[in-house]
Length: 557
Image (cartoon, rainbow, N blue to C red):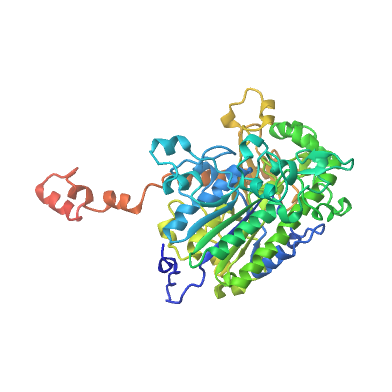
């Protein structure tokens, strides 16, 4: 690829488009309300806040899957979980799905990965197709379409699988020896008694990680991004900087472990009545080991401050990255996006982790900065449009000069560029997120249920959230009267018409899925253009030669 190949195209008026690059930042398990620009008073995130001041903060942004794997594959394909089929972690992404990397290469932009994807390769089909290991095709198919500048999915509990991890080599070079210093140093602590304690244990959260901040995973990945951008030269790029944190293990280096006092935390969003005669799926979640742990008051008071400390650590290192972009002039020609793959219950609704469909999980931060003058009118604004994770990929394609018409048979989201340029809102009847809990240990509490029925789908409008559950009754929340989702009104006769309307909206969404992405306009034109089939020697339904002549000419159809 030459520098000329990387020049941005002109816009329809002939003015040069200055936007050359995209910096696509994703955090793992970051709640929508964990930023000071979103109202959190327990922690300050000044660099992310300044990012919001430079762009648009989408306050109602929703992911399409309630767990890492399914959500990320929606980000990376621009398609709903129902369409791409990767319903949970470690489920392979079908090699036939086009990814962000494919769409970027189509328009002359390098798709570069630094951090996590949680993508499982479709090795059976990759081998069936005869892709040679280490060929570009094999690498792209195995790495979610990215150039893996530095892939690290951030979970390395097994020493025998982690010896060759570059981050482990980095830690050893800085004096932290052992088979797996990712665990023994970066994600473990020395407790109050002077004993080494694994960061996997929730009781470790109040103590600082053994490694100093400058050797943390967050610092390390930020350095890799800075190094790449400085070395990229004239190449156009879409850099996906994907942090593992604030995902567990909930351990953070000093001084971040002591920035937040438990007394400053908001009270848990939960009510006693939620656990009385609960929905059968929620009942199984409540009984799970993880939820029982996080339902304890001391779990939230110990872990949540560390979680917010991890958020502030990310913010500080992003400050270094943003300063480098300013220094090199890249801030002027790079779209910056900040988002997350899902949230974290942290004891809200008596639950831990993710996997279900409350706002704490499915609603996530989304900030988009477009440096072009066309976006000046929206800088510092907060949008209440319903937007989805799958909207980012078409936004990237359009902002980088691609023709959406060449990509839209694959992409199920809407470009946010009109919203960013104050040209209109993103029209959407409702936001959709899917949950598949058949992979969880709690699913064993749901006896005699086909795993393929252990699913639920959310259809969320401005006022209501409707959850179609394959097990038990459907749920409904009135978000105007009940913004904290404490009162299920799925059986309320007064809302029967609302339920019917939302159910129909969800059915309409299902009918519009682009499972036929291999069909192009040329395929249709070859068959439905008047005279096309007759001209191909298939003259069906003609009585006379004159009719056939007219049919071939396209005059009789």
